Length: 174
Length: 265
Image (tube, rainbow over all chains, first blue to last red; front, top):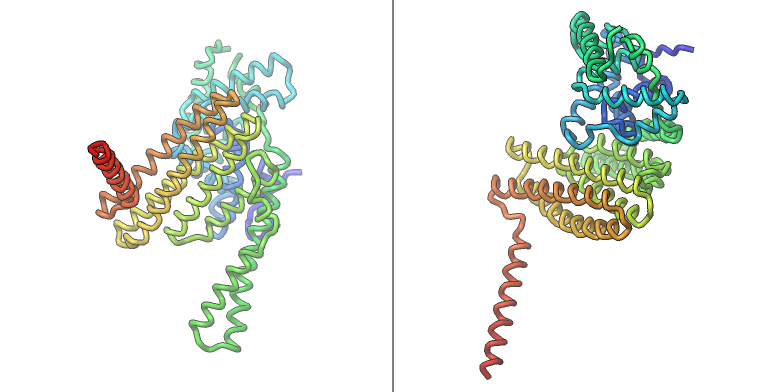
């Protein structure tokens, strides 16, 4: 059942939004903040609290609640990353565990682990657009809204980021 | 592998948070809203009551503040029970969420800095407790928490500097915080040194080294904050240390003179 909530006025709304978005938001934060599980949980929690505090500023006619929460998450991460630069970047041991939890074959596990570790070599915005588009399944216009860029520019950015990832992994074209 | 296959593989990666974290976070949201409601309702009830029985506005305000503080203290048994939780415990998420909630209710910059100093103290104590156990992972997480808290504390201190420059904060008010900071930083350095020794004795060299870096950075940052304050305001925070050093030097000189005199005799 696909839930579509576009308001955050009561505690029931907050609980429903949390149940709806916590896993995907966690994934987004996890990929952006050093692949650290505990850190990602803390930040995800803070993002929901921040969204609750700022609920009166959400305007349904200006965009979806989901995108609005992701914008809050993104800004929080930018601030957080700026403060902790050099401390949290990098591939943590948690990733290996997370890959194992997907229940894949050994070959697929190795391939996925390799993709994730190489993803971390991209620039922040390149990683961000790949995560939003392919791991979070956002449409291009939603990605554009979240990163505050135009549709075409976003489309080009995504395409270049994927190509760069392929080059880093030295995958043959075909 | 073509682009399509690469994306297909990427989409398979779906890390998920722990169920215990999800439950703890939902639980903390209920406290968040309950506290807000209590404060809002209490303010309305208090003023309605006071309007009937008490005319003096100063008495009204004092009573209202006292009642709201009592409600904050009384509200959320879970929140205060979780205050002794450590990283890795189920209630630790509730503890952290409670801290986030408390932060939103503190608007005064001095109180915010004092709050972050208190939280820093808690983080160091948690680390000290965890270093007694044999779990390198939780120690590592706890060290990260100390690091994060140090950054928060630095932000609050910089905020105070900015307000003082803008004449929105008195130097004496900031001085009290800086004195507390100096005292607590010294205590933390000693505690962290002891923790490091403990970790080394257990063979946890990686965490011990990491902790040393964190401690050095913490000491440097806090030292810089204190020094900047002294330079910009001309107020000495480190008088006690200087007096102590001077006192020690005087004692040494006296001892030397006594020895020389007794040697002469």
